[in-house]
Each structure stands twice: as C-alpha cells, then as structure tokens.
Length: 65
Image (cartoon, rainbow, N blue to C red):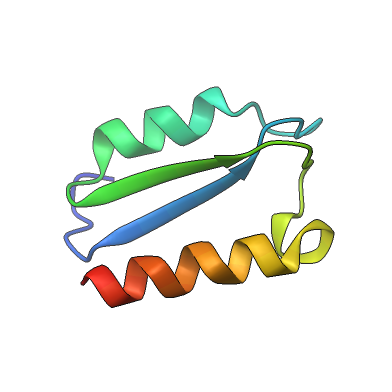
C-alpha cells in the first residue's frame, strides 16, 4: 500500500470480530500520511454503530488537512 500518497484516515472498531484492529496498524505502517483511530465500544461497522463519533473523526481529519 506504499503507493497510496493521499492523506488517509483509518477508522477501526476496537471489537471488530471479522478483521483485527492490528490490521489498522499494519495499513498505517504501509500508508504514508495516514492516521489511525480505533473506536472503543465498536465492532466491524463504525459508520453504522457509532455514526456521530465516526463523522466527527472524519470532519476533524478533513479540517486538519
């Protein structure tokens, strides 16, 4: 994933039963200009489970860039 150069926000649910949050950190290590946000009390679908938190993270990320 080193070919990705666009600022990237990686949002992951801490309790994802399908994909380990460790993958978020792996992606982060391979994507320049990336940030990781692990959402507590959340599973596989942060945008559906906790939309307010997810939206805030995205908006804050966009404002910084």
